[in-house]
Image 1 (cartoon, helix red, strand yellow):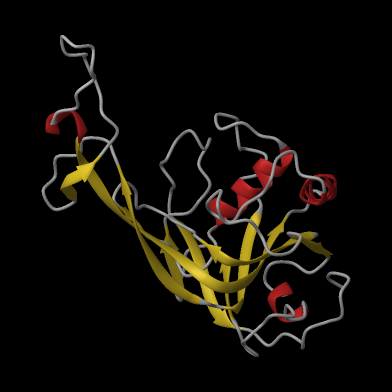
Image 2: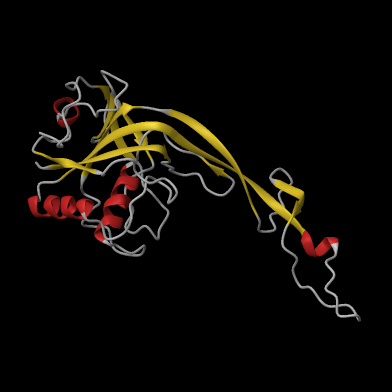
Length: 245
């Protein structure tokens, strides 16, 4: 079963699941829906396009360099009224100005006041992951590999402001999702000799459920639960440049 490998390495990356609005959390690793989103973006999919050809791809990811979770505090306007998240004294560009009789524009306090929202955004800093998408369809694997090499649009790791530090396509291997995390050498920037790996698996003892299964379309935010098996791996030391063997 061919497996397309994606090198997800950057100073900053973010992999959300259920959070939105003021609290933007990240998981400690890339999710399946996010990796499928990278592939869909590379293929030129639109937001509302059907994902049925990509959803069956079997997902696994290895944390060669886990990095650390960090938080940014940002502000955004919008008239939010929740007392816990607003900044009543924030300043915004004046709105609805009218000239006085002398023709001078005057901005009242009400014209500039904003109930600005305080947003907490988590991200994973200084991390490197190796993700794999496996399929028995060799033509689909080849199409994905070509798209990742020459993407239809710029690719990013969770947010548009988080570009990858290296080319994302890391080669195609014949190893299936159950074995490639042990067979593919560590990334050059790896900090772990026995990194954790998560592999998509049927429900059963030892699996965890995570809301990251690919929806019918990315226009729908409802991500069903997906079961993953988490384990330590024993890959070889980093290989010379040139991709997977």
